[in-house]
Length: 160
Image (cartoon, rainbow, N blue to C red; front, side, top):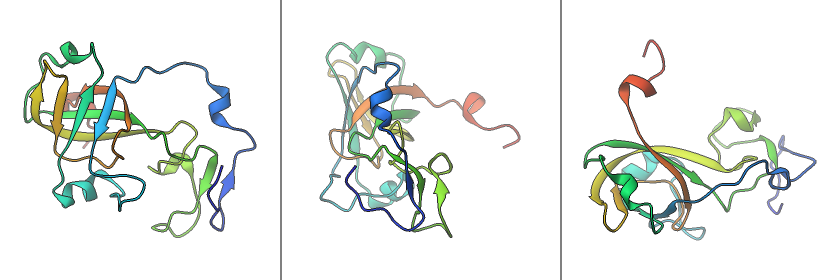
């Protein structure tokens, strides 16, 4: 699927995209300063450190789904990393001592290129279907799959 493998990496013998079991309706797109030709932050923490804001622009018809959200509220945004490689099952990240299984990593290279980040709402325009967010580590125009409120009573692991 294009990229050169690092030592220790393994690919699947099939294309996971060819085994689609369901369809996904993208509800909008992320707007960010990042792109394939820019130095994109490797995670949401590093994206926040840049001071770059971003936004989510919902597709027509989805703006009413923002009713009840408020500026300052945390959200969980799931998005489809459409440019990510899908066939790596063992990866050799530069930050690890050795190869790791894809499911042990937050890499964009995965069978289903889903990502999620917890962000803060910085502005909200329900009529236009636009949510300003504090940061994101996704390329401009990355498709958004879903948005959910982050709830401390639900989203914290037990005993944390």
